[in-house]
Structures are given as structure tokens and as C-alpha cells.
Amino acid sequence: MHMFYGPGGGWGWGWGGMIISMLLWLLVIGGIIYFIYWLIRRQNTPGDLEQHYSAMDVLKKRYAAGEINREEFLSMKEELKNE
View 1 (cartoon, rainbow, N blue to C red):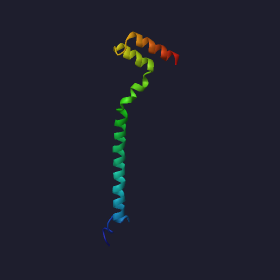
View 2 (view 1 turned 90 degrees about the horizontal axis):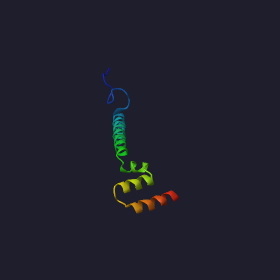
View 3 (view 1 turned 30 degrees about the vertical axis):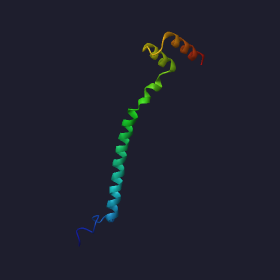
View 4 (view 1 turned 120 degrees about the vertical axis):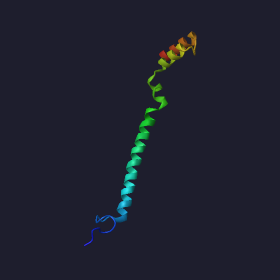
């Protein structure tokens, strides 16, 4: 009687099973790494914050920052109300 029955210890997979097992673990680890990358990238998207502001909010912000004068503000405000 032999203690070991070839590569795989008698499980019947041999070298092929070892290679399949390694590939499976590489896929699992790669999937976890990709999921973490996706989460980080999703949280740091620069356009997400600006999408929540309406056109009127942006107009008020520009007026408050001094980017546009009162006449421009009132004109643009009327245009937005008419839309």
C-alpha cells in the first residue's frame, strides 16, 4: 500500500486540478481588487456634487461670488423662470 497516490494525494485531480485551483484563486483575488478599485473610483467622481444643483442655484452662487453683476443676474433669472 502506498501512502500517497500521485499528485493530488489521491483526490484524482492531479496537476490539472492544481492549475484550475490557482486560476480560480487568481480570479477571486482579482475580482476583490477590482471591486475595491470600483468603490474608490465611484466615491471620488468629481461631477457627482454638481449634478444636485439646479440652474438657479448655480446662478445664485455665481452672483454671490461676484462672477456676474446684478443686471446679468436678473436677466438670467428671468430667462430661467420662462423656461
